[in-house]
Amino acid sequence: MLDAILGLFILVVGTVLIASSYIKVHESTQVGFLSNDLLSFFSNTKIRNLNNPYAGIGGELWVQGDITDADNSLLQQIGELYAVNKIDIAERFIQNISKDAVPPQFNYEVWMDGTLIYPQNPPVAHVNSKQNTRLLLVSRKLTFGIINKTTSSIWGPYKAEVFVWEK
Amino acid sequence: MGKMMNRLRKKGVFFTFIAMGMMTIFILLFTSQADVSLQKDNQAVKTRINTINDYVNDLEGRYFESVLRASTYKSILSLVFYINETGAFLEKLNASFQEVLINGTINNVPIDSITKKNITQNNTLTYWSNELSRTANDTLNVNTTIVINNATIFQKKPWEIDSVVSINYTVKSDVAEWTKEVSVATSIGIEGFYDPYYIVNTGSLYTNQIKMSSVEFNKWSISQTREHLRNGTYVHWENSDAPNFLMRFDNKMEKSSCCGIESLVNPNAVSPSDQIESYVDYLFWTHQYNPRCVDLFNINNPDTGGGLWDEFAYFKLDFSHFTLYNITSQDAVLTC
Image (tube, rainbow over all chains, first blue to last red; front, side, top):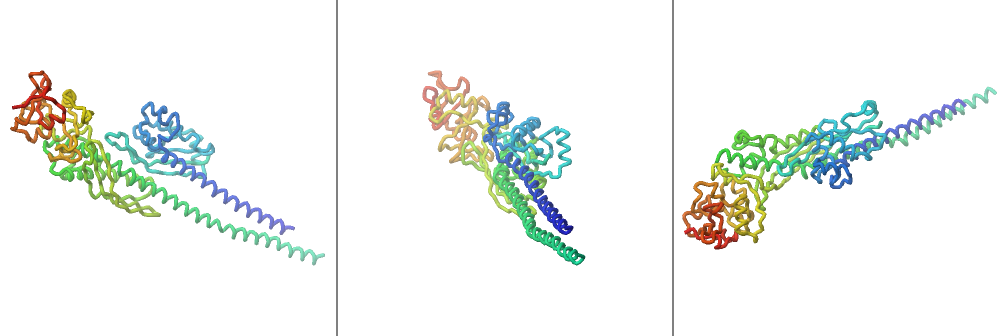
């Protein structure tokens, strides 16, 4: 009887250990995909293809003259706003375009050239979750662009980073 | 009874053996985890290669072109200021352009120190290549080596400058290496630049910025000519003998088959105002009609009160331009 219980115990413990190792693989993959996907979304989507009343063509930023080049990618637009020292607008821009792109159980940050652009003033819970998370992944990309098309003035190249972690 | 218990205990050991056996089978089955790990490694390498490949494509497709465009603009601007400072034409435009574009120097002297303008500092191809290498190393942990072999500048269109550079580059990472030789081309508009031909010929006393005339080739009239002269605008005539914009840097006043442009010299801005010349810029300072006054027209007719001398006294044109600008005898008389 004791041997049977021991045998059952070995089976259960073994199965649980194996199953839990699979759950870990799944989690890291998901966070990795999220950070990559978010950065890919930023770098592969152009302003002209964005249907957004705040950041798209004819939107609020367009009317204000903060966005002038429809061929800029979203990442380039963030870089350009950073280069001309409009970081507050860059923050709102990111908030607007990434609103539904990241599931609510994850936190994320966008950095440009070593400066935290989004969120600029992270709440305590955000900072704590970043410090205490078991898994934080970062995707990086190089970005640059042109500020003045007549004189072809260049900004960058900057290091763009997206950090994603589970809350 | 004791014998029976002993037998049962011995059989019970088999449960443990069976459980351990099953776990061994499970573990053997899950040696595919090693595969997962290997697959994960492969996936990581693949992702890394894709990331760096994106960077290489960006480098070739966008970065080099943008940097060349910016540096070409700054180099031309700087060369105009250089001519303004030295008061002399360049000996060889292409050689000077290449040196300024790549190093920001002319005859091994920083051009900004001569022009006293901060134009090429942090705007040369070498500077941008170094910036890119540094940022790429920081961002993607790759070593980028860029060697710029040569640069040329020319015109295929009247209102645009084309520049081409040959670049060898290597991108090295821990997983792969890219080595390529590419030719990068770009073009920039010439409007807004000062015409070096005016600068040298007048000792910078009379300068003129390139601005394209909006008049269509068959819509010219005396009033359009007046506006043209007043605004210092430029026009491109098909098959004219005019030099293009770049030829004005090293005083090659020859016919440009594709891209010749010309403006009219304002007699009020030169001294003396009354000269036996056609006041078309490249004819005026090459003295092609001096002293052939019989081939010139005063754009003024005292009998009709027509012409341009009320505003531009002594303005003259040769017959060919007299016709091109669609001026009639109502507004002109032979100079002599």
